[in-house]
Length: 581
Image 1 (cartoon, rainbow, N blue to C red):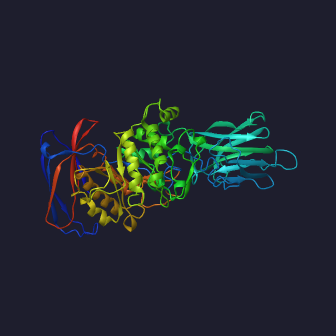
Image 2 (image 1 turned 60 degrees about the horizontal axis):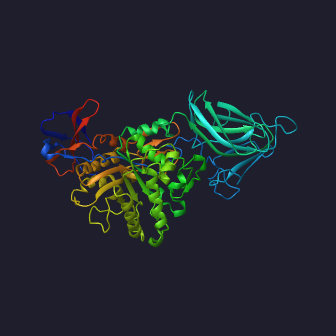
Image 3 (image 1 turned 180 degrees about the vertical axis):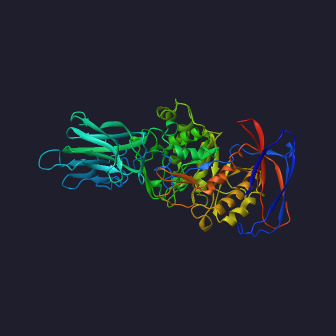
């Protein structure tokens, strides 16, 4: 794909470009002929141009591949509340591990936590001490957490460690960041408290400044004092998160650089669940982080503490200057469904969520939002009723219940149906219809004309998930990116009916690839964009730009696509033309 841009005057312009191809290889399964020529005619007169929607290109975030937990959300501790092993005790505390042996301590779980929605706590009975016959090993005994495949601790940076503790006696707890084997100490402090101070659950908070860097670190809680100690809700966060809102800086910068006009969240299949009991529920993901119960995402098969919850997604959209698009469960999972006659509690939950996002602070749920630090409403204008549920037994009936209730309460909210309306008229009202496509490079490139003949009347299209997948893509390839670029040119040219589009998935932690390919790849300390990510940079100026009338004339049957836009650069207040072919 070639791209160029140049400054143009405000007067009408007529361009005639000649593009020559002499490529000795096969591209996108189309043989390119030697000495092939193509003529691109661009009419830049005002009469032939039309505006592109302000919302055309954005991003879709799903909690998949540890995109949030262990990724975008900067929490370093995995399974911070010891709930991932389930509510039945004894339970699995993975990835927490024990420092010491059975002669020095016994670690178990019980239901003694002070938090009603997450009762599991860790109980540590220390059998050794600093004196007597059973001497603790050097460095003490206790527990450690490696985070999400190693914590990235960097010299000179500060980290806030918070945990809740209760004990039968006085405590002397060493809180430290160490290397993966515990031998290198990066930062450490001691918490000393009398028996009366910790006889009930007590919140402890310390600030650790790292004196060295280690990208594969762990958090340790150790002691040499005999007795019984309980821990719960252990958190470690870097102080320098994006705008102080808990997001990992370098990952947010990758998003900001492609200037998304919207963010669709939190899924995807994550919203549905394999079973409804494991679907994402927004009310369980708000309020103080210590009180959030977390849940097991049974589609992508890992636990999330839900520190990245409904409030944080709305805050993320605001921080990026993007419009939030909330996808909520409509009573349907992959394996079970709520009958339409029983759907009203789910409808009320959606209405409450909209109230939380956009009602004033005097409302019931607006007051909860305000108590979390955001008294002003968020700019929620779009909601999607379910994800990929069209055709399921109860979808249409459930959808209409949601649609009618939301339209009555919030007539300005734009609603998105799961049913594709690009080829035929839908049998239910909606503002947008969702369109998903994962296919080969050849197929996606050919779909650049997919919306050429779609009706311009009625609801608009939201291409909320697209990507080249399979052998053409691998974990990210130039071939996939070129095909996606051709598809996006087609969407740009059909932006009178396609109002929004986003690639999927957005993020992957390289230690947990549940889906390939992805736009942005990261681990605890590194991040890079795949070719599919960089293609999106070519379209950063398209949203809100002006589409020019561009016509390709070629002496070959080879499929070519091209588009041309003009946009005004806010930095120098000049108008530019950009050509993509």
